[in-house]
Structure formats: C-alpha cells, structure tokens
Image (tube, rainbow, N blue to C red):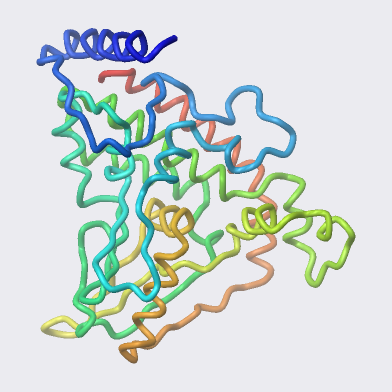
Length: 307
C-alpha cells in the first residue's frame, strides 16, 4: 500500500470512529518525528504467534516499541526537567483522533515520572528537591504483580469518564501497559536462572548483553517512594505500577533521580528484600504473564474500540 492509500485508509477509519462518537472527524497531527501508528484495534504483541523465547521487539505492540524509540530520554547529568507518562507515549501515535484529545488530557497527571534539577515526583505530583528527605528503592518484582497491574487498570477506568474517545485512549493505554509488562516479567526459561544464586552455567555465556539486560529488568531497582517535608510532619509520594514500568522502560530516569539525590545530599534507602519472598514471587511470573494477556483481552471486550 502506498503512502496516499495508507493515509486515506487511516482517515476513513477515523471518520467512522468519529461518526459513531458524534464528533468532528478532523484529526490532530502530532510532531513529525512521532512513531508510526498501528491499527487502533490491533492486539498487543504476545497474544498470537509468540515465539518460544521472544526478544523485546516481539513482546511489545508495534506502536509501543516505536514510541519508546523516538521518545526523548534524560541525559546524565540531567540539566533540564524530564518526564514520561502513559499519555505522553500515546501521543507519539502520529494521528491522534480529535475525539481522543480530551480523555488524553485527563491522563496528563496520572501514570507519570517527573525528574529534574528542581523537582522530582510521580503522577503529576512533583516535590521540590529542597523538601525531599529520602528516596526509597525496591526491586521491580515487588511492584509488578498481576493484581497490582489490574488495580492500575482500574484507576485508569475511574479517571476517564464516559466521554467520546474514551475507548480509543484506554485501548492504547492497555496496549502500552501490557506491552511494557510483558517485556519485564520473565519468561519461564528465565525463572530458573533468576532463582539460582551465583549461577555460572554455560547458558549465561551464550546470552548477549541485551538478553541479560532484559532478563534482569525484573530485579532492577526503581525509585518507589519519595519522603518529603510537609508543613506539619512528613509526606510520601508512591510510584504506581505505570511509574515503575516507565522507569524500567527509561532506566536513565531512575539513574537521574539517584544522581540528583546524591548531589543534594538526599538519603537513598535501598529497602532490603526477603529472599524467600523474592523466590515465591518469581515463581508466579508465568501466571502473571497469562493474567496480563487475559486482562488486556477482557479490557478490550469491555470497552470496545470507541466506548
């Protein structure tokens, strides 16, 4: 299909969606370097034809992988404010239907990571570094149970009322979260390796750096809590599942938080974990993967393409 045919097909699809929603079918273009789009109703990669040991590109929905490629990453040392959010990544789709604009705006302050020389935070709630007392980190597996993912989905459902375009936005968000989740939660073949302490088997020597990095995402530490001074006493900002997944997708963001904390003399606490709990959690990884795929399918059926 040539470019004109592709654009015509995309516009026709948007016209149909807008007609059902009772709104203007005009599309809002995003910047030229945005990631190419996939069909709105495309299932996340991993549901069908998944190879036995897929890499990152096989696990994520096509548009998600391309959005991650073009999204700016924080440089170190970090000299300017940087943030990432579910809404920001969805906006990398090159033609966002106008009817989806309002629901996207409602997500701007939800499911996000913020870090810069002046402030740090999650979900639209950034705290000035002068008020930050402590950062706490946990390994990713402690925040990524299937129950936590489902609870995060429920939050998105509650944030967006039944406006036109709600289903389109929630469909893209669900593709994003499930794609990022599947890229982190280990495959059955990797579970045994994660459970082996000090393993020196030949299997490790056959893996390249990228494979090792992907497998180790599940145990990588992310900033999950920010303790800060309030007018009276102390407060806490906690990272939701989306915020943890975004830190894993952009590991430079976690590195930037820790580097800025060290620069400002902010205490960093790497919360210790129970090895027994870690083993039990990792063993449940395979069931979590199945639950995530089932959640995506159930979510899509419940919302429909334009609900």
